[in-house]
Image 1 (cartoon, rainbow, N blue to C red):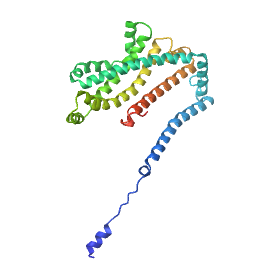
Image 2: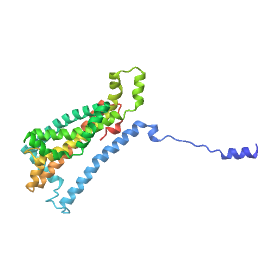
Image 3: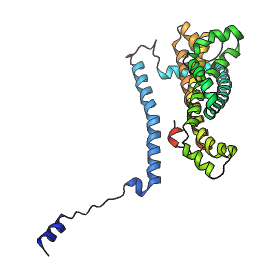
Image 4: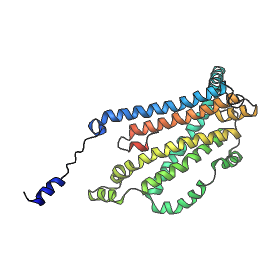
Length: 287
């Protein structure tokens, strides 16, 4: 063997790539990650509430303004026994669900129409974009002026608040479909209905559920603000009424109920999206 051959053999390095645990057992790794995420999701509020309880019980924070979680829970139980919390929750959820359904249906239809029609988009997009920037709560006096007191103005306000994010997200989903998908469908002889069913609709639905997740939170925020101003029932009314009487505990009960409403509604929308859209990226449907 020549000197050059011996040098080349000595310089040869063998690299061994060992598979990771995730590659060896991906199912077990996925289960472990989900367990870690769930533990963290539960551990964080437990730690926060525990620290809050200790601080309130030891007098580190004033109980008058920051009552202990145990006091808030006790007040919530009293409100449930008196029937006031159920009444307020039913009133708020009724307004949210009716307005959310109306705004989501109209917003999804408008987004689909403007996404598919260049002329409709050119005619209506600037007008709707200008209306989108108007704070929705500022429209409540106008709705009260037109429709008077009652449920209609608040439901319409929720519907308007849901319409705009749904419309924008759905229109963007349709316009973002790559031209190659439609060209491939045309190459296989797809007509308009087949194009809509097999290309546009599957690309449209995942973004629709993203819009619904955003909109349900917006709907709850808006209805609480509307109940501050108008109405004699609802969680927002209960919070404002408790503040006016300097009753911190019922106010905190209302705030906690609103937080749970948003969490549960968002989880329901995500769960429905995962069930109906198994082909969609899971990241867009997770909480």
